[in-house]
Image 1 (cartoon, helix red, strand yellow):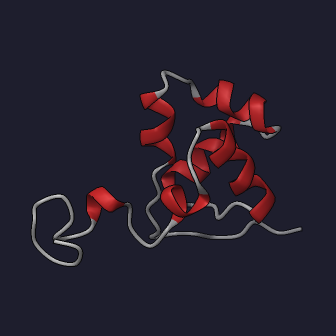
Image 2 (cartoon, rainbow, N blue to C red):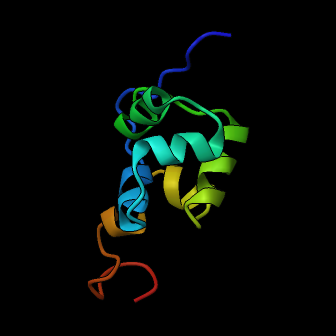
Length: 87
């Protein structure tokens, strides 16, 4: 099975992991991959399988949508500043 590229995609894995005080090695061990895989996912160089994305999200207490969606809520223009949808 080949490596799936996610080059240019941003995700919230690093932010969520560091907020929990967890190392890349700890996350890797908890979800059954190598630390290098976690590094690649966080850098946006590797698109995880659905199963790996679900495991990462569960371990980080988040959802796949929050971690890997188009943009995290904090990155979306207009959210959190009273401007845009839902305001």
